Amino acid sequence: SYSRTAAYIRDQFGHTISEGTLVHMNRVFGERLNIFEKKAKSHLLQSSIVHFDETVIRVNRERQWLHTMSTKDINLQVVHTKCGKETMNEIGVLPHFSGIAVHDGWTSYFGYK
View 1 (cartoon, one colour):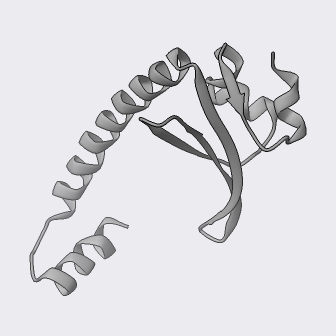
View 2: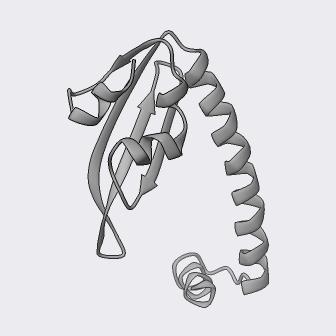
């Protein structure tokens, strides 16, 4: 919650920040992250080699999947509740990628050319 975040900042750093400021920062950072995600996907799609991987993580004690797509220049990570071809299609990189996909041999990857 924003109130807990404000309290943490006050307790740890001795600075007071309003919940409204945190809401604003969250909105601005979200907008900037969307811009980065679009640019990262564009970069990945133009790359000749991309590494793909997925791993289980816990988010609020729930099992989710961290999907990673990377080159030597950029790394994009997307957290999703599911793992599989449907999720990869939703993320939108692998279905449109025409280069060399480096992966761990997980079955879902073989559904792409």
